[in-house]
Length: 112
Image 1 (cartoon, rainbow, N blue to C red):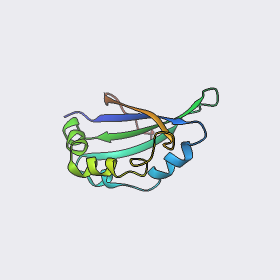
Image 2 (image 1 turned 90 degrees about the vertical axis):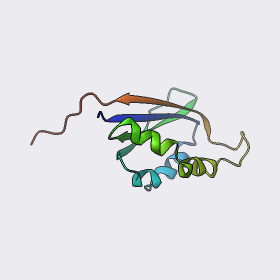
Image 3 (image 1 turned 45 degrees about the vertical axis):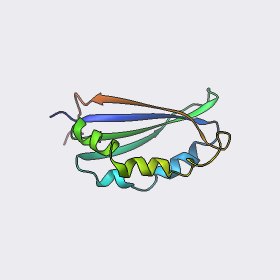
Image 4 (image 1 turned 60 degrees about the vertical axis):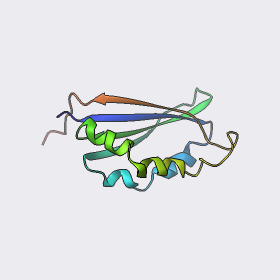
């Protein structure tokens, strides 16, 4: 078994990143799934771009756990019921989202 990381890169309309980041401030159901290791939410320095960008990174014990979470009815309902699911495109803070998965090859902890 090999740990894996899923990275969802979300482009956000300029000035609205904090609105999206607030949704990740508290743990969600993903934290309760078997095989979940941790989540990191990163905000890019996009001062020179016309959009904001965040990356939602989840690490899993292996890909099978990630797939079980991603394909669960609970996860699908959560995304359909998100605060922006029912608003018009003009009102949505997000521009696009792209999911990339990675095998965790090396990970180093601080020296003791």
